[in-house]
Image (tube, rainbow, N blue to C red; front, side):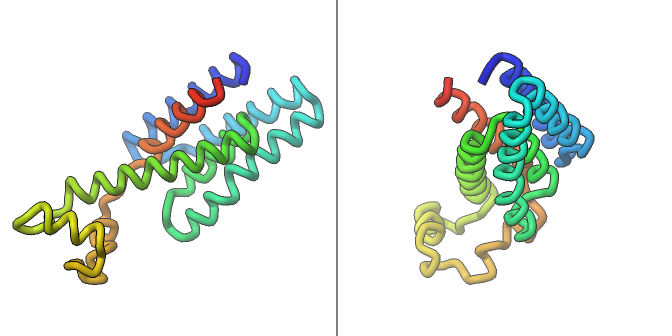
Length: 170
């Protein structure tokens, strides 16, 4: 990635992070404008090959997360964010960011469960019940924290994922 791409991606992620943390929304005008900017940039630099690279990256970022959105795993803004991000960084980089974002989201979710879930009188018994489902949690308790409406902005996982991938490629 060159300095223009790095600056655009950094600006995009900072704005998305702020809006997602404040209001748990990533505005369409943000994702659409950064997607359009990526397409214009890649066409200007590499012509039709750049357009194809931007389209491929956008599809690689958009399609897998659309499936996750349809399963009610993430919001639509996150799907569009990864589509626009893919248009900037390309197929493989956006897939790496997606993988790390999902891993970080899982880690955040586990931390969220440990912090907000009462494990009973003994922490060790609660940890055992968490690790081995058959040792104390009823089936309905598995998703109780999610059903309570508690969720976190996905950008809390996307930001460290972007830093992780950026540090690996630079």
